Image (cartoon, rainbow, N blue to C red):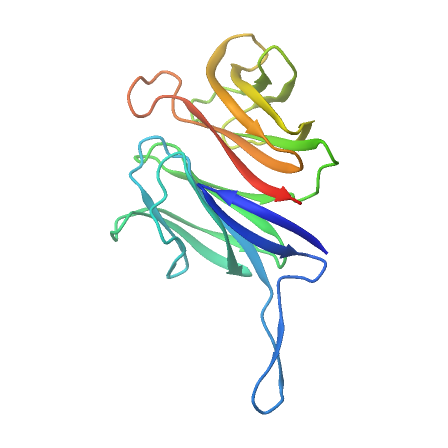
Length: 237
């Protein structure tokens, strides 16, 4: 049985995955077997640069206990499978930002991103890989959520290019890097040495899967300006 830790916005939860599925069997008082429905695991990320803190709903149910601020995320939660309505609201209100549908498969993990500026919001749903890195290694993927219509590269400063020419709402697979290291990541205009943003002192732990995403507008200087953020998706032990 594989076990992983997921960490989002300072919250840590333990998940037992796949080999035993995400279900359990119980018996009621009449000794009839009850099989709990299979579920998916879903996380929500606020990647809208000028959004207020938001609430994330699956159908009519609020999924978060605390507001999700711009640049932050909600830890994986259990979600019933099948076609679900996903909605972002301005926190503690009925002001809808955007709504869409997504189909979740049993025993799969998903990241749901609120993208773009709040006046023209978008949603991106990504199926998350959970393949365990080798000892001493980690995985890093890149997601471009900047709607500037320009392709971007993710580059280790003075080192390798981890993702190339990703346009808005495109993303890379997890790329293997050395774990247990601190990195400075640069967001480059695709195919050039032009640095649009630098993300410093990112700790990539051994046997983790991590996401670097970019949000905002490269031409903006206010709250909509281009920024990059890092999250540790999965920690294997």
